[in-house]
Amino acid sequence: MIEILFLGTAASMPSRHKSLPCVAARHGSDVLLFDCGEGTQRQLMISPLSFMKVKAIFLTHLHGDHIIGVPGLLQTMGLSGRKDPIFIYGPSGTGNSVRMLMGSCEGELQYPVEVIEADPGLVFEGRGYSVSAVESDHGTASLAYVMEENAVPGRINRSKAESLGLEPKDLALIKKGISVKGVDPGEVTGPARRGVKIVITGDTRPHDRIREAAAGADMLIHEATFMNDSAELADAHMHSTALQAAEIARGSDAGMLVLTHISNRYEDLSLPEEEARSVFPNTVAARDMDMYQVSISGIRSV
Amino acid sequence: MIEILFLGTAASMPSRHKSLPCVAARHGSDVLLFDCGEGTQRQLMISPLSFMKVKAIFLTHLHGDHIIGVPGLLQTMGLSGRKDPIFIYGPSGTGNSVRMLMGSCEGELQYPVEVIEADPGLVFEGRGYSVSAVESDHGTASLAYVMEENAVPGRINRSKAESLGLEPKDLALIKKGISVKGVDPGEVTGPARRGVKIVITGDTRPHDRIREAAAGADMLIHEATFMNDSAELADAHMHSTALQAAEIARGSDAGMLVLTHISNRYEDLSLPEEEARSVFPNTVAARDMDMYQVSISGIRSV
Image 1 (cartoon, helix red, strand yellow):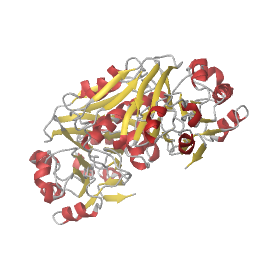
Image 2: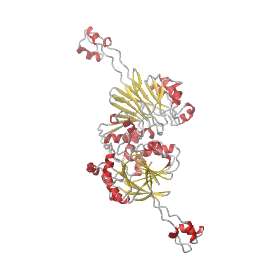
Image 3: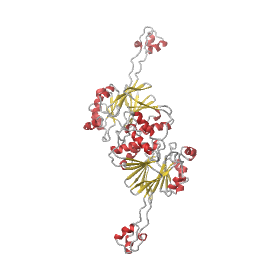
Image 4: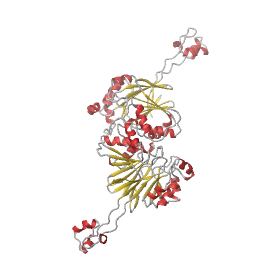
């Protein structure tokens, strides 16, 4: 199960109701942040998540509204006694941006900051989950991210194993996929359970690479800066419309679409929501502090 | 009249109830910001002040919690069509900090940013007011600021002027302080009215320079990171206690003391408030979004 918390859902600038972009994902005790707009540390303090549990930050691109929350969050973690390293992933240029953000302020952190400029593919492996990057399409170095739980191996049916003459000490080998006493692991093992898959696009035009990366995702979190009547504007600014996000969701056979990064011009979020639902019914527009528990048995708003 | 709005009253890190340091001052249509912590742009959006009216930003020092709000605010003003230059004043090193903050983010502003590393003395003259800097004592390059309305010249008593034989055309000279037809300007002019004076200390240990600069101030906004039982800690970290702030207020014969930058360890703000009141009764501890109208006839909480 992965918990998703929308800490900031604004596009470009905040509003009274929206903080700047950040999606938090919790798996076990790890918290990952996807983007880290200004105000993220305070949003975390207001939220049920602990800012001290942030393991890594994944930046989708280096526009200010997506990254300015980094130095304040890192300083506050330092003042609160953090000693563990923090990992910051992002596209080409991330090292320079983080160096400048941290260098702008006097004072030194007492823990390591590891910045990794990520190539597409697997970028991070946590305990029971991984994060991969996909090149997005925003007119600058930019990445979408796929967070995926590891598959859980099938459970051994102990009574069946016993009836086939296996002893408890044999099961360690069976778990490793090795046949014992003529019994094949598949005979006594239930089916493996897939993990949950969540895709966070960051800012991007709709793109086949994202559709492909999102194949079968439980939740696709897609930007929808504009609605379809501003499709040209969206294209010119390298953003997506709600309709385009829905087409990507349908094309990838995702379970649920969550729209975020909706321009402040759309005060009534039900408008982009309805536009997307015309193509992909299981759509919601994210509000700040919306939280979901995503498991393979379903998604629950909490 | 100067309006003072506490946009952020936290020390070092925000909390659920406190944004990072920023005091806004409005005179006429100009808004000045003293410090610009993370979240300032959103606090402005929530407040009755317009973020587009910000004329200048005065940084007290270059610790992250006081400056990280600068790039987001500048970008949002740019996206909202600002063309007027903005002026950023601060101590030595401000140019480098602002350059790094702005350089960390992709994208260019479409209006000029003028950074001025200020020496003690007069630093800014607005329409009907001025801002001066005073060296504070925070273990790094740091400034306190004095914002002061210009004195308003006394009014001419027209009937008295007429009775002394002055004609309307003579009054222009009288206004300039020139005698006409044997009439001295003082004979027909009421007393000049002093302007309001407000002092914002930023982070500092208590210091004679600030006490002297605050002489007769209508409002002294003094940091009070700690209470007196942590006076050694305050001294070691180059901060003040509530008691010390009150002693400065008493020594400067200020009209009112407002404590801010109170550590999150003091959840109950009435404790530092009471400590200060034992020395200087007219004290309050600032909460986010507290607003005051400061005029020479008195201070009104609005």
